[in-house]
Image 1 (cartoon, rainbow over the protein chains, first blue to last red):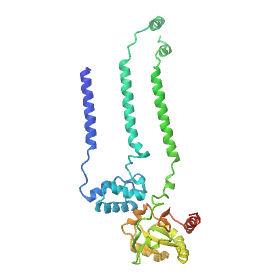
Image 2: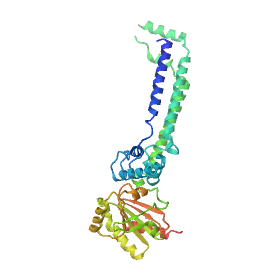
Image 3: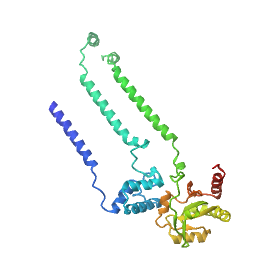
Image 4: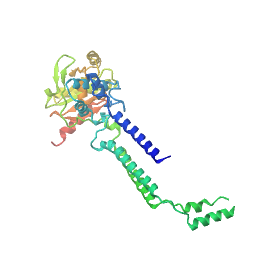
Length: 153
Length: 196
């Protein structure tokens, strides 16, 4: 495989990854109606009694009540973060499905990035070392060992 | 005859730097794992957290509305007295079980005038709540909350839930699940006896 072909392959792989990341991070724009906004906010809040299910997906009384309260706050003109904050004031941060970016819970966001950087650094260092490693010539000891093995045949 | 592998392997020792890196990486992973286990092991189990409330230590949320009898009532009207706010629903079995305890508490303290019991419906139609009181007794004020907005302001997750509001308007305790007269009396007595 030629060096040029290898370079082009790496460029193609990098482009595909980059395009996928950019495409994935672009959302479909802000919600258009109150119902859509309620749905979006409710999907980021955890039902207080049903494990990991969101308020949007759950039909228990508490989730229905929270959805109504979200709708009422949205109709008052509150922003999404104000609505989330109002619900968390009563139920605590445990109802947030998206962990906060500050405090101890913020490690959830930071650790994967740190791990990726460390892994990439380690891989780069390993590749560089392998490339630098000199091709060692056989020593007299090696030759003697091979001859000894051949004699035994 | 095959070459003795041990002789060859002895001559292919891994560089000392690689071993050091592997050792450090293992150490870091071990420390992170130990940290994670210690954090998880020292956390309160979910059953204990269920009785915590963001509201404890804060002023009680606005608790006002029309009662099942058509009167207007507000927690603020009772400032200077202990107020017990009980969220319930007629379809809830633990609510039926705790009802006699609440009735006993209400009877005791209504006479003494030191504490007030207020019920709030949660996910319950007014007619069903009225029928509940007709069946099981009790005549304390019950706020009809068809949209459950008072319940959400208190962070109610599952009825029955009971909040105790001190005479200064601060929430001092949340009881998740059924509450007893002894629970309420014990809590109020503890606060009354505590040095101010």
